[in-house]
Image 1 (cartoon, one colour):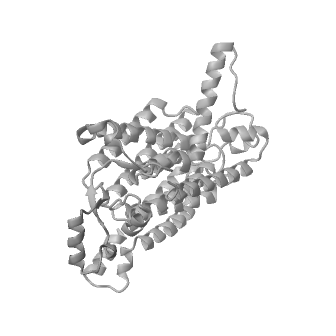
Image 2 (image 1 turned 120 degrees about the vertical axis):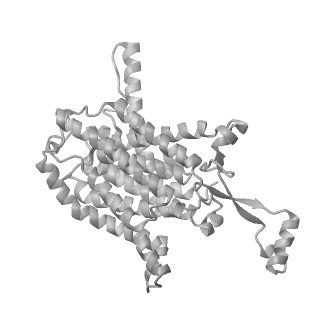
Length: 415
């Protein structure tokens, strides 16, 4: 909203200083600061409301150290993160941008599903909450909305290099009045609707979903693209949910991932940097930097109350939303194939559960007694069972997350 106000002041009234709102870097910085402050200042009030409503965490006895102390800690704190994201985005971003609209829909949609799950858990005094099939249906519907929008919306495009023929290059030399072909670029950027994405570590590192099975992409590429989008959203939102098991882990990990995604978005949305790095230039994607700045600010602000010992838990209200936003953001900037690296903490947590359950069922069927790979899953609980203190586990996971984030950014040049 402030963007449009200052745009009017700048364009119509030539108001001094109003033009600064034209810069993405300025608005992203303001969104980060505002989000951080909003989250910290409204956080305590929301925690008090949750306490008055007696929306405390129901704890199952799993034999973990410090578990009993967590009983009664307010849950549904994801509301704090959601408000910390949406308020700055509404103030500082271009609200007609298709990517911003999709990300806000994702935030509200998954926040509502997670909030309903948290409320039902409290209402029924157990950990069941919303049936898993309904959560999956909600995630799939969101995936359909995101997938079809990114495929069909006219403003979702990329610009690719088209190298000029010799005659075109000569004409360009004459038109620009330079001395030789070396003084002009031998290509031009052409806007297309290709479903290209980035494959890390490969020299020719672009994959077109629509051409995986030949010419099917010309008319039916959505049959490949949309299911992939659904899978990534479902997988990432549930992986973030599994990671949210000890104080601050999912929140801080999401902040690290968000920071890396923000760098990718800024580079992909800037014609100069994308040309220098030889990566896809995605028009209008730079606006997402404002959203991810608010995302990082709100998660860091939430850590004010969520670090050990936590004063509030985000619940499914926050965890499903965080994973879903990360998934949609990565898909929008064509970096979803980097998620196994960038979101490696989430992937490891999810994989530990899959392996644990699968191996237990297999050994029980074959030997009559189920065996386990880990002392307990998800993975962070295994380290708790080993005897490592909760804050140390979280800090070590953060360090691994930072390493993975840097490695992901380095893939821009590692081909």
